[in-house]
Length: 388
Image (cartoon, rainbow, N blue to C red; front, side):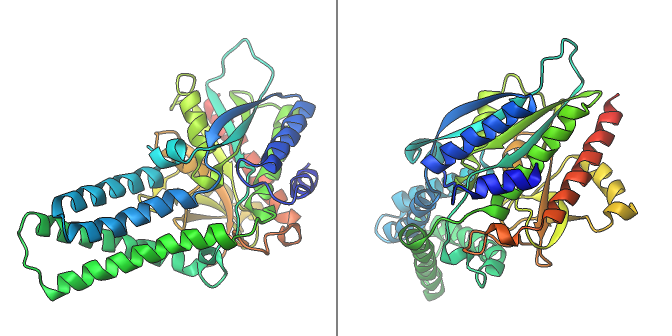
């Protein structure tokens, strides 16, 4: 199943969010779930076609507000705080006004697979999660730039805080117009203008990638596990599959799913196990994730993963944090749901390949995917026994 799904998804060339190729890939996965015996459905939602416009607006908001504050301090401060709130909402997925409303001009879908209905409710429900859309190249994700993502993000946060303090002081006449403050504001304006230009560069020059590692690999593992658990069901947990669209534009698919099913979902019953970017590097279970406010995975799932990783068969699987960007499980975790993610990370804790031209099927190691499936299966079965 792993090789079949990997080749099938890579056969579309790319699966950019809210495109015909993403729709066709969704149909393909739905038919595969149907063939495995699941009750599969495609659940549509509004989605942006790119994250570039969202962050272009935010970065221009930062830069423009500083210029505005030179002439109108209070309105400038108001615009800066508004951009800051929008930035926080996008980073945490708790409220993505720009992503889910203003720039949501396309349509994407989540593919959901449910097993045959069981008259007896089971105490646990496990969701196998993987996104099937792909991204495009940009200078920010060139091999030489990727190691700078985390330090630049940290620097951006420091600069935002410093700028906010200076604008507050200037607005309420608590600080003199010192040369140092002017230099910081000037640098901040240029810096965020540069980040805005990077978003324009991505749209003007970015090319679609095949997305073998990110994330045909994760979908292949999730589908392999779906097949295994259909043949040998869990005793105390219901197994479901969630293949998300629009992850690459801000975890929009996962956020849409959580909103659409908020009445059905239970934070004490539903566990999300995510597979993303299982390419080069060592196989890892993610201990915490997120850039702005890293959140830890499920305590029980991390405990079981740690126990498994101490066994000879799985000794090469390690627990590592992923704070270079965000995953679908961040949307679930920030809303209080227990999660764990699996990735392959380099020594510098980045996935590879990643949003670049080399993300092709030749770079994916099938043995790595088999190992991930074996580890995750054993983890889920041990978790299930805890529920009995």
